[in-house]
Structures are given as structure tokens and as C-alpha cells.
Length: 130
Image 1 (cartoon, helix red, strand yellow):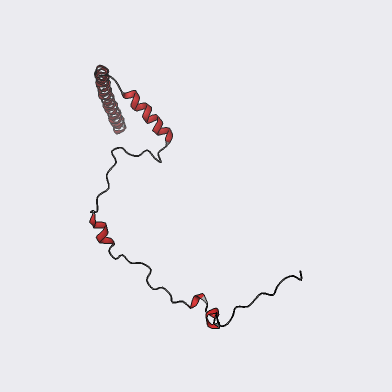
Image 2 (cartoon, one colour; image 1 turned 90 degrees about the vertical axis):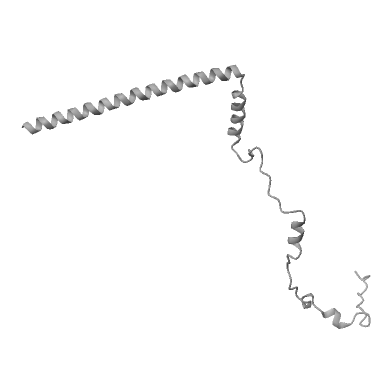
């Protein structure tokens, strides 16, 4: 404990008092924060190009279950030209059946409407007699 030496103070001749007292905040404030000088020139040296459109849409951020199912569905759609013709023929047949069914339903609906109209006319005629 007693072996400590007292610390020496700086010599005033080497370090004048004014420099010791100068706070850091006394320095001048910066006034310019940013400039765009020469940036337009530099940007146009190589030309400003449009971004390239991706050939395939990114699947990033999509529902991964959907993406997997889509991939399997695409693989399932692959077929030979003969199979493709068969599928087209079956599709056309199904379309034809749907059209026939639609025509029948329409005719039936028109018949029902006509029957309702006739029934209403009979009811009105009965009421008119009374």
C-alpha cells in the first residue's frame, strides 16, 4: 500500500493550459451532409437499363403445399400424342353430353313455367266466375 508513487502532473510548458481545457464540442459543425454531384453522369455512362423480366415466375413465398402439388400435377399431365388425342376426344364427348343435358333442363324449365302460367290463368278464371 505504501509503495505507490504519486502520479506526475503534465508539464505546463509542454502542454499549455488552453489546449487541456478545449472541449470536443468546440469544433465547428459540419454543414454539408450529402451531395448528388456527378452521380447522374456516372449512372448514365453505362446506360440505365430496364430490368429483365424472369422467364419463370418465382415460387418464393407461395404456399409450399400448393407448389408441390402443382409440380406433381404437371408431371401427371405429360403424355404421348396418342393419349393426348384420346383425352381430347373424351373431353369433346363430355362437352357434348353437358350441352345436351343443358338443353333438356332448359326445355323442362320452360315447360314448368308454362304449366304454372296455365294454372294461374285457370285460377284467375275460376275466381272471375265467382
